[in-house]
Image (cartoon, rainbow, N blue to C red; front, side):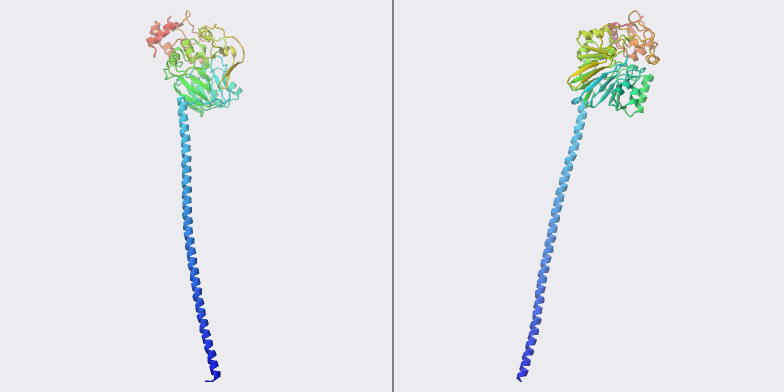
Length: 455
């Protein structure tokens, strides 16, 4: 073989080896790349796996956090629910305390109590910092209560009380209800047949006012005051016996009202466990001697006494024996017939009294309790008798006296007086047992009083 051929063969072999080496190198590179890719893939898979694990961990953490958050929210809801329940329980407890008289609100600001001069009738305004109460609403034949409330810039009444259904106490209640926003009306529950009473009922029904007939032992918180009912326990049919009687307490200062409750009802109140003490006492029944007994005055132990009556009224209110009794006990006495409007102002600790005019109450009133000859027709109708009946021989003749006169006899309220008139004649005082609710014990009381006679 020639040298040239050998060189060619050598070069050919080199080329072949180079090609083989090249292919081998490429294959190795591919394998390396595959390995790298595989490794990268594994790394990617591991990364994804880790990512998934991280996501799962993150999800688990989020679920844990959400669970914790939900638990916290539930705990907060539970705490919030418990707070409201506590509040409701507190409110319920407060309501029970109000009913049971265990809670005494603090006096906030000044309270003005206006004993309004409404002639031979009653009307008293409580003008407090966060409440207004009107006790009775004057006579049916006058128009002075609404104008007076307007002069005091009254817009709403939290409570309107009619102590009993006589026209000198509920006379203008219908007009008050129509003129002002009244939250609640209290009455005794005794029913009358007069037009005045019917008008009041119609006014209540036509209004949005609530209605209630309270009984002894019930206490009510009205604003920063407490009203404690001390009578009646139940109704007998006698309007005077059924008079709503109650204390109004403002801080450390208290007021007592008894409507036209008479001596037998005063005795029942004394025998009860109710607190009767008061700094200011409005004399019962316009200062009549049928009420305001010495024992009752001792039980109330007032610092001052106030009555509402018309000047020179024919009933002789306040009766001389009551005025003398008050004076003998050293109790300052004020009356609308002498002093006009009487205003007590208190901050719940102390109080002051101001009057429209000065004057002296003389112990000279006579216990005649005769009806005025010029009494309005409506009043005559309500009392079911004519106005010209008079007493006989200085006593109240049960056979000739008017209903108004008969009601001055102890145990004889208007309902019994009307029954008495229908049962006439009576041969003696002992025959009064024919009247429903009058027994031998009450007949003895009537005899002992000495007002009644049978002519």
